[in-house]
Length: 140
Image (cartoon, rainbow, N blue to C red; front, side, top):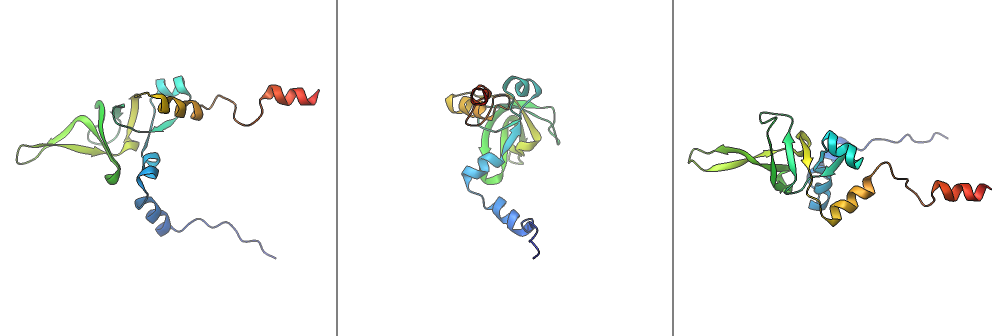
């Protein structure tokens, strides 16, 4: 009897799931990579972006601009960065939406939840129920 091969989900369903995702899932999807210094310090590659993080734009028209995140606009899948604005015909300034994947986080706003997240995501700490010491004790 032939076993069925795993079939990737259809494109239509993947797109529907992405664009109709609730805010809690959008938070995770709207992650940004950490700068090289932060990556070495925390051993974490990327984090969900949040207000008051400092970022550097690395792609697009506004690349090499740095600033603080003023808004994480989950409904539109964009973030607004300080001093990245455009003047309207009326003279009013409006923030320009930047895709979070096109920025690098240079400074984190740390609170207890964010520190716990970094601790969980740290790739150097051993994961699992048992430590190497526990395993060696059982072998003897």
